[in-house]
Every structure is written in structure tokens, then in C-alpha cells.
Image 1: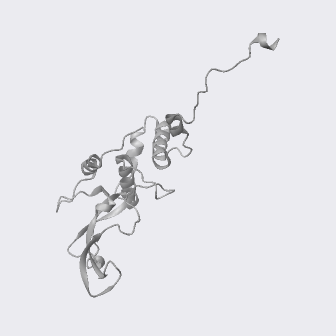
Image 2 (image 1 turned 60 degrees about the vertical axis):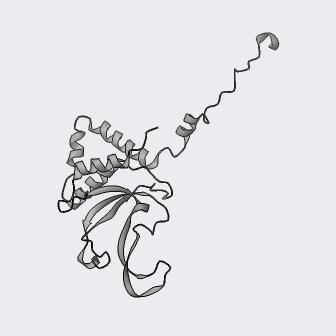
Length: 191
């Protein structure tokens, strides 16, 4: 079984590959635990739902709308002028790009992987027209069919795993059982 990557290692690789903001040194992309993220917001209601007479800036959990904790790939972005009053004192904000949970069931958390982060970021840049996905093709120039199949298999394994649980049952011994030596009647008994 493959060990999960350390978040610190993933974040270091993201800094090496995609850099930092030149004005404040913050990483352009990062992976964080959603429950640890706080932000200052201008709120008109208390956490209990009561309307305040005057809106007040309060520190709140950034991902409070999600019922469970999850790892998040975030991107550093400039806060649009129309939203500056919602997030006072902040010209930049980290916004979510990808939540590491199963596409079939959000209750199943997936461990973050650098390969997945890089693929998502490169795909986002390609869609924006800033970069092309050509470097993925160049890496596979020698054996494009085999390398493509291998990459797809890695991503499918990461996203879906072994849905039949046969692999896990084989590892734990549930799928294969040894019941002892076979009992075969001797030829003398049959005569």
C-alpha cells in the first residue's frame, strides 16, 4: 500500500513548480486542511443568526458550509473590487480549486497528491490559454499509448480505487481461504 505524501512536501513542490507572489512571498498554490482556515468577513448576522444593528468584521471558519473536514488545493487570487468590502483588509485571498474527496461520495476523503495538484493546475492554466498541455505529450513521446494508459490507470486508481474491495480482501486474506488438505477417497475404499 502506498503511503500518503506529506502536505509539507506537496506544498514545497508547488512552490518550486508554480512560485510565490512577488509582493508578499505567499505561495501561488497550496494544500491545506479546510478546518484550519479562518478569514475575516464583514457579517450582518451573529453566528446564532441574529441580525446585528451594524455589520461587524469577525473571524470565521472559511469552509464552514462544508459538513466535514477535507484537504483543499487553494489558489492565491486578487480579491475583486466588488468583494473587497466582504473581506476587509485583504487584497489577496486563497480560493479553493479542488477538494480531495471521492467524486462519487463526498464522505470518502482522498489523500492529497502532488501529481493530482499539478494536473489540476496545468489544466486550469491550459483552459485559461496561459500554458498548453503539450508538456504532458512531450513526456510521453517515446511510448504514447502505454504512457497514456499508465497515467489514466494512476488517476483512476486514485479517484476510484478498488470498488470491488477484492484487492483489500486478498491482502487481508478474506478472499482466499485454506481449508486443509483435500479429502480424496482411496481406491481401496471404492472397490
